Structures are given as C-alpha cells and as structure tokens.
Image (cartoon, rainbow, N blue to C red; front, side, top):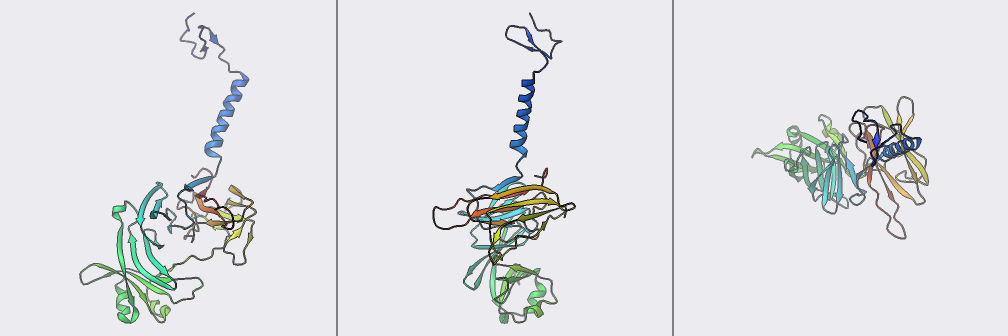
Length: 320
C-alpha cells in the first residue's frame, strides 16, 4: 500500500504500513528524559567559567564598573571585555591598578619605593586605540605645586598600604607642556598633603592589595540582590578563610530568598576571592547586576602543587 498524504500523523514502516499515530508511554518517558537532560546540561549550573583554569591567575582586578577584568599571564597583562569575552594584550606591566573604568596605572614597586612607569588610557575598544603615556618622577620642591594642580585634568592620591604606613604620593594627569603635549607626573615629598589637596577634586587609589572582609553582604549595582558567604573558619587577620564546608550565594534583597548558590566543600584548605585581588566599587558584581565574580584556589603547602581554579561568575537565575 502507498501512504496517503492526508495521514501525515502516521509513521510509516518499511513494509508500507503505518504505525499508530498515538505515542506510547515509553515514547513519552523518553521524550521527557531528553528534555530534562537538556535543561540540566544547559541551565542547571548557576556558575560560569570566565577565565579558564589554564589561563587563570590569582592576581585579577575588575574595572570600577565591573565590565572589564585585568589579569596577568605568562605573556603579560591582558584585559578581558566581559560583555564580549574578548581578550586584548596590554603588555608588560609588573604592577597595575585601575584609575577609572578606562584608565590603568602601570607601575613598578620595589621594597618601599613606587617607581613611576606609565598610564594606559582609552581601554574601551581595539588595542590600537590605547594610549600609553610615560609618567615622570618629580619631588615637590622641584615644582610650583599649586600651578601644577590647577593645570591637571585628574589628580590621584596614591596610597601604598592600608592602613597607611608611608606618606602618600600624587599622580597628576593631563598637564599641558610648552610643546602642547600631555605630561603625567608622579610627585613625592609633599608635606601636609591633606591641606594641599583641600581645594582640589582628587581620587584616592590604594596601590597594594588590602585585606578584604568576606563575611558581609555585597549588594548588586541595581540593589536588587546581594551576595553572601556563609560559614568558614577565618584567620585572625580576616584576610583569608579556611573553608571546610561552606557556601556562597546570591539572595533577593527584598525578601532574603536564596536565588543561586555554589557549595564550597573540600577536604583541603583553600582561599576564596570575591571580586578579585582588590574588589572594585561594586565589590565583584558585574556591571549589569547579572552576577558576581569569584575564584577559589588551594592553599599551597607540602605535597604536590595544588590545582589552579578558573575565575568564575555566580549568576542571578536567567541573567547570564
């Protein structure tokens, strides 16, 4: 017999006779199982790998707005554009800090000395748009300080440590030279710095990593969520936490409902970073409040070298 094209709901066998158009219970169960597997594989995990383990480092810094990430590898300093997952190489930079969301201060630090290097700006597009301007070292008594500050387009008070144990210095950007070229200066030897700066707008920048308190709520930029680490035995300095069996979660800020969670269970001591080596203004949250960035890495001790974990993102459900 020839299949009638009107009966398109039938499945036809090789002998030309139709199978029943009604699916069996077994067929329905198989279909449900396939759908559940697809959902589990694609949507179940609230955690995304942002920088894979083979590229990851324990030194990484989110931009102030949380849309870019600086991290260092064997090839130098890279910037990851988190909205496009594109990496662009900045180059050799021993130490680095975000000054604003598109500007990085690259410097060298030896002992108690901060050696000026360069400022890299326009980090918002292709690498050929980046501008790298060297920083010139000056001592305060070499210049007319008020004149220099009045000409500056941006002033940064640089602090080496927290709490402050050494005198702060100034990074002054955008002073126009007689040749009409921009000059960037690093000033030391300034007495009564607070008094000097009282009539100027400036930004304070901590150059070396500070201890970060883990046991607190970190609110998303839109204030709709907060992230919270629960549990753990912490060191007296509260710098790092040894986590025997803990969790890190995202909660609804209006009713404290748990929305997403990653379990941190291990039989080894490890360190937990939220938002990088020094959290940004949003304390590790993405710019669009879609999630918060974190990393786990094992405590180094005797025995084989511990594994490197990726830099990851805990996502608000439906936002990643």
